[in-house]
Image 1 (cartoon, rainbow, N blue to C red):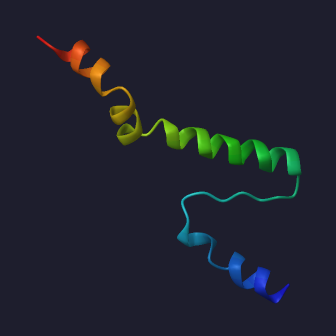
Image 2 (cartoon, one colour):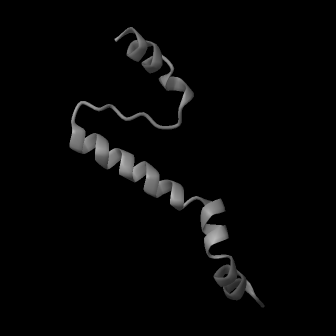
Length: 58
């Protein structure tokens, strides 16, 4: 438990915090975070580079 408390004390160092007091809600939150990472500008630009080039072509 001391190790867990030590790890939790660093929560301010992270972009996301999931409180696992309800497993289903915590899982939903985790899935939302993972899904949101696929939609970042860098990931979407890489994934759809050809389409973006076509759409933005004069």
